[in-house]
Image 1 (tube, each protein chain N blue to C red):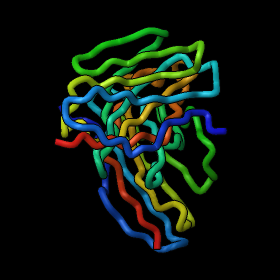
Image 2: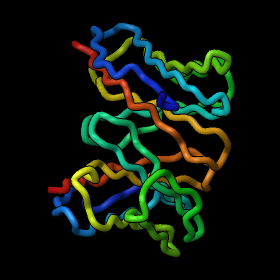
Image 3: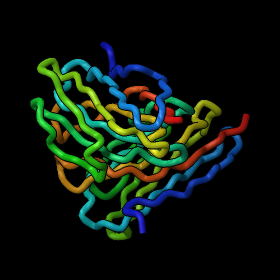
Image 4: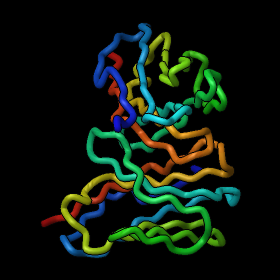
Length: 111
Length: 112
């Protein structure tokens, strides 16, 4: 079993839809969680960074962490075609440790 | 403010050859990490450099080595290239080893 799992997709939604992207993990020691967006043939771009359980909102994006279930989510409201990309979750145990990435979920938002 | 810059952007090498990839961190950042991303996969941690020393290393063979220079820039070297080394090599920098990492656009390596 991989440490971090994501639905590979591709996930296709119409413009304006609410998108839910999810990651599950097996190591309960993970404490720091991040979401990156990666456009085709580009480097990953940081979207959200959370530490504790609960929700964190930034514009159209909301990151949710449930440590008891070892489950994190990224919600995108009013999705746009420009949101079409691969979304990567990443996490680490302690400050200073390297990040472990999920395999990514490919999202297509159709106009 | 320049972000993380990497060179070259694309290169093709033959099996058995050696390759050097270069990275300049974001201004104000002193820590550089290298990741390998195979097609359709998430980035895999190779190693991290801080204060010119390898601080952490992932599960990669000794064919992968690196260096950090006094100006915080870094190189990734891969010897005896295998076909399976074909991937996007990403450099990421941070203000210190524990902080949030920011990626460059990557170097696409194809081994034939």
